[in-house]
Image (cartoon, rainbow, N blue to C red; front, top):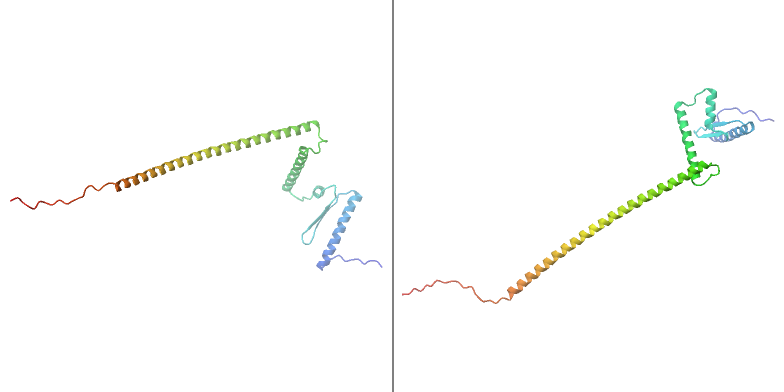
Length: 212
């Protein structure tokens, strides 16, 4: 007996709904991949789950944005305005510049040089030579700056050493003066202590006797 027809309606049970979504999504992507290979078509699939998660598939030889651009051109429906077009063009330009810079970087590393022509190789060689020259100039600037800073430090060290020497000399002179003064005071004290006692101080009395 054949399988009965399933009525298409929302599945109430959340677990069964998630299982069915996973199976149907995988089957849909599989069919899209098969029709793209078998019939040489450009296929794009965009799916959002009930929770808002994005699932998409696009044929390997194209991109989803190109498929949407074709849809907009052929259907006449405007999917995005002029502002979004300019933004998309700017993104493409940046991506192209990035790709070119990656290629140039590989060339500077010595990779993928067989595809280059003679004038392109000369341009790369000149670029490397200019880079080496600029690097040497930067190194010389750094060396001169380092030498200047070293000279300044050396001069500051000499000035500081001279000032410390002057302070030491001044301090030594002051200590010498204090020492001389101390010895002079001690000498004076010794001299005074050795002097003989040669006189006494006596009070003066008036002569109270008068001649008769």
